[in-house]
Length: 372
Ligand SMILES: NC(=O)c1ccc[n+]([C@@H]2O[C@H](COP(=O)([O-])OP(=O)(O)OC[C@H]3O[C@@H](n4cnc5c(N)ncnc54)[C@H](OP(=O)(O)O)[C@@H]3O)[C@@H](O)[C@H]2O)c1
Ligand SMILES: [Zn+2]
Image (tube, rainbow, N blue to C red; front, side, top):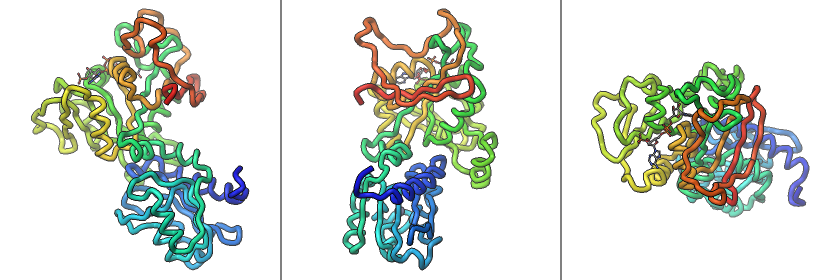
């Protein structure tokens, strides 16, 4: 614990983080942010950002506090914004409400904000502090923060496999290797993602919907999200040979589908929500990530087969390797996890284990590239 902050500061910032977390399924392309206003040790207003176009966390908390905001301490999980976006700057809102102090969990790396929000607050003669529980807010907004810092989305490669690293029988039979609980977890991971990436090979083999089935969510989440008709992630499909057809199940969900190839095709028979991204063949995957960053995709969840998995790993594009491991052995004839052109052990890409979780009978592992 740093001397700069009291135990109470930690407690209220944790509350702000818990509130922020309620927005993780919905705020993209914006970050998930929470705010708590505290006066004489009591919370007088609190709120979180629900989705783009709706009020920011600070505005929700200020509205709730009314006159009580005067002299209060504002705990915000990200530096208050300083620019006129869809809403006027929150830094100004806090100043006008007469808060006595602002504590931000971290500075906002968004070039439009980056220190300017806290500067505005300081210039108005209001005390401020930064870097309280910043690790937690980093974790909550890792997609948004990666896009702001690097211009590309957080790239999460999901693979489901047996104990011996197999993904399907030799025949291609793969339904289901992992259990019901893992598949429900995948639904949640999809729901948190700005976009999903797959390939024509996977679509032709499995005809997946690649959507989020909100109706199947636990009741506490479902209420809010089904009522608000929250977003479906964008489906991005690599389709260099134009093999995707309007009859594929992808098109049964009314949410964007972006078909990626190097040559344009006629989309007249496709629904309006289908567009194409045309990119040169060379460096297609890395160029795609830049393009998705420009399109405000914070995080990209990848569900594909061993070829795309191998290409992404080889090109060092993967930020997180997420493995669901089922307690089954499929034997050496079954299909492998990723194609990598390796001949010696010393060339094997190395990973660092960051999280481990039991899900039903399966294990979920989260790895990041070693040395990143
Ligand atoms: N275990 C799992 O978690 C999991 C998840 C999903 C799917 N699957 C299984 O995976 C199987 C399909 O696997 P697969 O290996 O045949 O195909 P895949 O890896 O899904 O897709 C291969 C395709 O990806 C694109 N691609 C790969 N590398 C590329 C690069 N460097 N640049 C540009 N595009 C690139 C190309 O698409 P285009 O040629 O179309 O442009 C290529 O044909 C299915 O049977 C499915 O069931 C398993
Ligand atoms: Zn704001």
